[in-house]
Image (tube, helix red, strand yellow):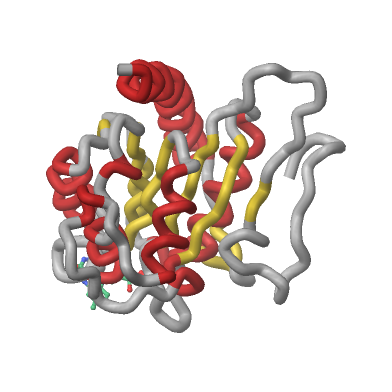
Length: 222
Ligand SMILES: Cc1cc2nc3c(=O)[nH]c(=O)nc-3n(C[C@H](O)[C@H](O)[C@H](O)COP(=O)(O)O)c2cc1C
């Protein structure tokens, strides 16, 4: 957490909203873009959460975003059960309306993805499929992790999916090989290489988040 006006929520009281790590901008006309860091893995004992928490701290230190950590284990969506195509936004379930409102307010996303069987995990795909317009014209970055492949195959599999939803995948990425060796006391022990990769991706996301905001404002004005 950075800045005297930032707030955080004690462990144990954290839900999707309470995980909000947002600085308050007094006297600032333009709000910072909202970066949503989406934790894909929901597995008990997952390393995805410490990886995401490390990235969250880098994102807060970057200073260009209001940062939210969104844990799909807490969002807890059932398998896609909406009767209508998501592009129509005719949602019938409360869980979808809530998920829609969450993603709608985001200006940029980082998907923290495990590699499962050379792809990304099913919970993440389900969460993506639930919505359509809410994702559009927003940049997407990736933090992948796994064994020797460092999550690169998961990231490559995610890119055409986010592109189909009109997100812009950024080239810069964080890929973490043998991630389990880097977890100590429930935290990711990141080296300079990982920190540098995170910072490079954040810089690109900040650039594209501004551009995406303009695009969406122009589209809304038509
Ligand atoms: C179902 C399953 C499939 C996996 N497949 C791969 C794989 O294809 N490539 C890889 O590098 N690691 C693979 N792994 C190892 C995971 O990368 C490692 O367990 C990692 O901690 C999973 O992320 P999580 O702990 O956040 O769920 C797999 C793990 C699981 C549980």
